[in-house]
Amino acid sequence: MFWTHLYTVLFGGVQSFDPTGDVGASDPIRPLLAAIDRALTASVFTGDATAIALSIWATMHGLVTLELAGALDAATAEAAFRSSIHATLRGWATAEVFRSLHQAELAQRHDQGRYPGSLTD
Image: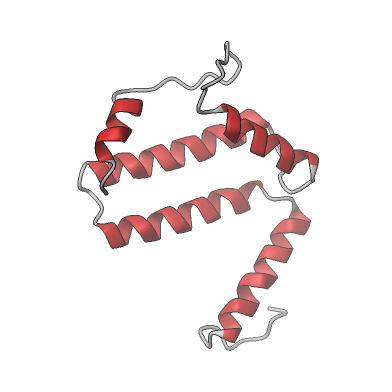
């Protein structure tokens, strides 16, 4: 990871998470909360925006911290990032969106020959 020093500059040490405090124009949480608000409005996510943001923030920061500490090699980190963000986002998805995502994943696996079972399982 060529930008590890930038992560340390931005997020070195323990960080607070206070999306209800005074937010500046450069607040790194603002775009995340805006995206979550759009997903809630569009009935893609269900839940509390702050709880959703905290779960995404904690998951990503935890994985980056592990990678920077050398606990994850590049391939493991890539797989962990993908699976963790997918699982986190699916966890906040509405039932309808979750079913749609599940069907799309089954179809993709079926097309790739990795999951030859029925698409209705």
